[in-house]
Each structure stands twice: as structure tokens, then as C-alpha cells.
Image (cartoon, one colour):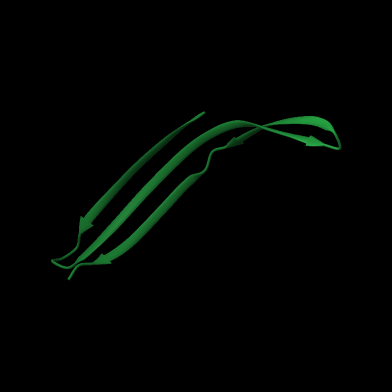
Length: 60
């Protein structure tokens, strides 16, 4: 189970050029279950990255 969110912005620099910026956050928690030499193993795994992006675009 987890939570995810995103926020972004587009800015038109001129008639043809634009800049985009976005930020994402994800919070993922799960249990990993597997067998190791016939013994069951359970590991709690938490992943919570921040992802950033900046891009430049040109429209025709």
C-alpha cells in the first residue's frame, strides 16, 4: 500500500518555446516473502523516492 503525489508547472517562454518542471513523491510499503534454503523469509520493504524533472519544449 502507498501514497503518490505529483505537482507540475508549464511556462510558455515565447510562441514556440516552453519549460516544464515536475516533482513526484511516492511512498510504497510492502512485505517481500521468499524461501531461503527451505526456510521462509519475510522482509518489510519501504520505498519513498522523490523524483524531479525539468524539460524544455519547442512547438511547431
